Length: 468
Image 1 (cartoon, rainbow, N blue to C red):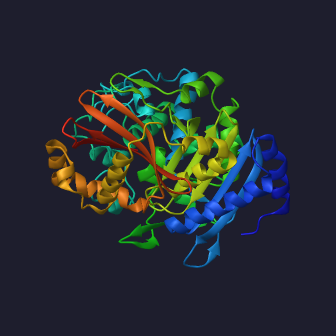
Image 2 (tube, helix red, strand yellow):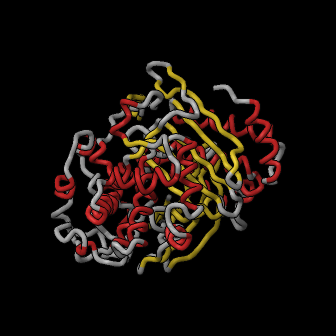
Image 3 (cartoon, rainbow, N blue to C red):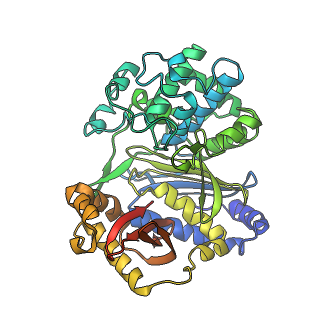
């Protein structure tokens, strides 16, 4: 875990231009934050890289790529990148459209007539997670079946008889199924296997020589081992089979190789500038407005700053590949911990906050008009939700019924991994009909935050919750 002197020198030069404090101090704070995240989440290892205007300014590896064998992670270690794969799939589809071989506004039936709901959804909706197709990776058996080979037909069978979750285009809901379908479309239209198409038209074009699939992991000399927690104990995670993850998330890469992809994609080597703009522009849904997602890329904000990128998660890995266009900063973080909340995204958030402390401070400033008693009540409610022992008398009848019907257990499972809050920041009050919302930003440590809101009805009861 040595930091190379030339990297610290480069950090001094490049980060000074980014209007941040003295670079050595920034490096020390980044280092401290990464260690804090890894310790708090019990993550074995990580590799991170920061680029300013395309130039490397910080790169470091931490901990173990294989904790059981005490093998250290390095900046050249391979990690599963999970759903970051989706931007490769999206780029392939757009390449084929540029070649006149398909249209993203065509129905799926034009290419896969026998697919479920093929006459109802378009390729654009598959690309943007607005199709409403049910999730093929859901189900209590997923961890067992996903480690074994499967044909496309077997994967489709998992959702064939299920209805759409919503009318296509009306809402956004993350769907690996859409990318399963897109992978098959690529094969049929190009008459190449998905793997061959990606290698020939994407990886080779970007100059990527260190990107493979999960099927290759056994042959990679410094491949990280994936871990996750079960019943509070860290254990080795299973590996999703190459045929099961496929176009939705089967790639394995390194920091430097993924940055080659970023430069090629943004620089017009993979798709046209117009199509990259399409990928990085949020689609609009008919019911909910902006989806905060383009075509294969999240298009949202963090700390109030525009952000374009993607996270990736598998059974044993979480990763993040985030670009902040206003600052010209790219942050890549790989971890071999598959838990949720995701350590990979925690790291990119923590690093950005250290690079731009003024932005961080502004976002942590409480809004005016805080009701201190309400904040205390909100904090108590959240703590109880984490423990699954909330006070039923706090809730309106409808929400209380949902809690007793299983929502309480689901929220406890989702919230408990965050740990104890370190900050509870009031961010504003708003009125929606008969409900008054009190919004908060909860802090749990470097890079770990959760938006949380309580909707209070006219009787003073919690009628609704928001989080995310």
